[in-house]
Image 1 (spheres, rainbow, N blue to C red):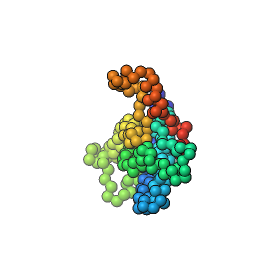
Image 2: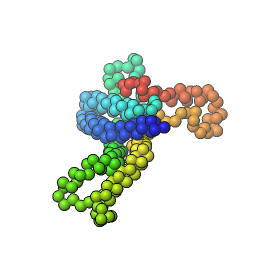
Image 3: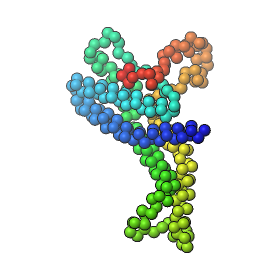
Image 4: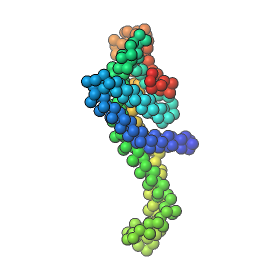
Length: 242
């Protein structure tokens, strides 16, 4: 049980802290590609740049699915991207991403993901710092006395023994943050990954939906067709260029 809790804490911390730099990189590159492509859209080159930007956003989306898979400890699934017919010419192959709705969802994710990623990373780092800082106060607390004008917090609680009171405050505070760290990381990881789950992952299994009466009467054959139409693709098995 403790080992599972430790693994979960590591996964959630890794997801939250790495999310900020990755989201900033994806935001910067995708935004630059959109601005350049839209600015030169009157030319064929601008449309190609836009198409390449969508492919780039698809790559970042695939990376985010791998991070979600690591976070959950299982493969995640998505709906397929629009394919290119075998007989399609060069121009159509280059511009097909522009007609793919899922590629635009990837772009939207790249533009919005810095918001939850920043909040999650900052709060996770702060929680870790408060927990470790409080518990390790006996090792570093002496450095505070080197700061000119430093006043111990314990002086307001126990003037007779300010050093002891300060030590107790830091240790109790660090212990409280350490005990609540797993739950805090769980909430932060769930909140931070909500946008990714909404835009990048497939919806729930078709068979798990609440069926309407007309769908019930359609029979098993209709359900099989619907399942085939909404086929699921493992994010671990598919490349972002698929």
